[in-house]
Image (spheres, rainbow, N blue to C red):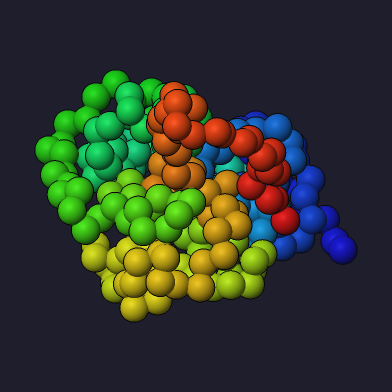
Length: 240
């Protein structure tokens, strides 16, 4: 396969033809933040717009995860224009996200948190969206909780369910600002074909999908003198 020579942040980079700017930058050790891209499965929908870069000769900022490299391309990942756009995108995502970080299961490992820190975000200037918990948190599954309030529409879960597990339980529904990821016909997860493999949890960048915590039930059983508790070890969530 032919190679392409380009410049990213004043560094000469060589990449294979067909490679995206994001992949070329990563191969050179140059960090471009992103939330939706999952390059291991070629999942680059360009949905989050966090990976915006400035390419000389282009009229507007370019999403690095979907734009292929070309010979002689000059890319800037950290100009003032890029930083302002990135900060605005992350700020809007946070304004449309529940402010429950201290209690979220992904606190400390949340990719949205890390991107906000990388962008240097100190405050959110917009009014926060108020989310009713009723109808947006699906606890019907015996092992997986789906919290639609925290979904950032990256669609990684859709890809892993479809391409890795080939179950295709999750799918995007509606359009525009009303788009959401749901099981078919917006049914509860327990009524879908979900096999509880946990792959969607593994790829979710935020706390929109997480395993159900039964620790309190275990403690209750252990402290019940009328019960003889037997512990059976089981493997962790399978990673195919």
